[in-house]
Image (cartoon, rainbow, N blue to C red):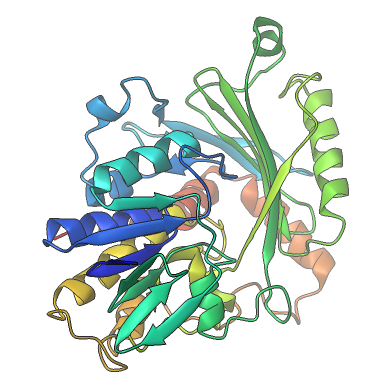
Length: 374
């Protein structure tokens, strides 16, 4: 049993960011993850300049031996309507590969890495949290994603009553022949909203790597939706016909639908463990990073003493940053489905709506300034 000032469960962007901030504050931190790094992670994989700024990411250093694809334009629309290309004068986002990105952030954090350990026991004794008889600390950060064991400890009903989004995707390096059969430009991700407005698919080229996926709120028969989407893309020459057919899946909760408790007695959650993915885009890296920064600031300022009052202001800070949780956010149910689809297809095919709402608002959050890290 090793003693630390703080234990972080989960080595993804939320966990590594929290650990990085705590280490910078002088705390002795351990990160526990069931996987060894680098590890595969299902994610479309882009980060905005706001995330880069909060993480103080040295882009020149990062791109040495890693994928960092600048994005200066997007093609957006519905599968039944017109596609619109929106261009920016500056880099609007960056494409990354999550197995590289997460590994880099975890190593940079400076925390003790206890990887390859699935969390099986979380026990409270003598004012300390004990994890697997492996490590103990007065405070634990749950950053293990949707299925985080710390979230379960706080009462999350994983896989039962929660309303989730399911996403399937594949990412692979293309051969010369596959590149010739892929019409997607490197700097221009393509986003296709489903006709029923229950989700969207994407095709994202990061240098020689192609990422294809689809996520839906109505996740019944999602494999069939993914298959039809890929057939539709291939028929239009957007993706190579001989791309891999084995997709990986993951689940998450949209911010507006999450009712998870965010903290307890010497315990706090961050990122997807709470359910902070942006409502309309499902993007979760920025909320993960920013919630981790907020949690780390509270921990660093607690002076090593933690009880049920330590994180009393945490939920309020999350709401101030991301809005209210546990509220629905779509179009009103009284609007007929056919009318909603018709209006959405028309709006998604217009340049001003795509730039102002879909991209600047839903996906890039350009109007919200970066959260400064201490």
